[in-house]
Image (cartoon, rainbow, N blue to C red):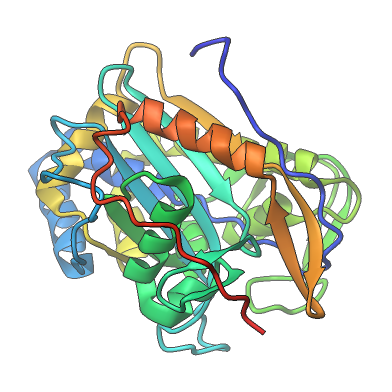
Length: 341
């Protein structure tokens, strides 16, 4: 990985509402690995999962030609929604987290950009400037993809939408993962029950609910430490999922993902992910984060993105996708945004 990479950190927000962890990339990579590792039975299972989860959307207007993950650089927007039985938004919930992933075929590298859910941006589907998480409620995955394209001036080729249960079920399907808990924790569970999760300090195996609580807490530290815990969880899942003893669990993992996912990726396109997972140097993954600050507009909290950080991130993503100014097609004219009251 290049030593000259640029990583933009998010300042710690004072907002009390927690951002939830969505390790979107893990289930997708596990499915890709499974399709090549466990033979015909598992391959057929993966195919069935993706066929059931397939939900196409209109192709990006910023592409002049179709994209093939087997041959081209491409991008995926991972959309996390908290559409649990308790909340029952019937698919019209706001997105709870967004991660844009770009894939470079020559470098065999992946860049992950976390987009804060309260980011103050222009949402084309609503015609106003508001929180980015409002896009999904306004028009589902396509409206969210269009909003991210507007913000960073790059095509969003694919999406993967998962609800809250996917991460928990994947960890449980692997019979838990091992993490190093830095201090005693009392956290809410996925049903918003306060202090339902109690973890002692030290190295231990945690189940899905416990792993989620471990990854999202920040009561005693900051977003920086929380990010480090999320990376630890990510590495632990990948290590467990790619170990020989986990092969027999792949069917359960796929079922956990399939029950909680929709995507416009077809199963035949999943083969394009294999080269990013099985390279000689392991998974070449870089996390990019946006700078910004807390802001209150008309009495509503927003995360105001730093314009320089957005501009630098835009250039970084375009470079990773090997896009020049002429290759980002159908550029929209500047729109004078309205502010959502």
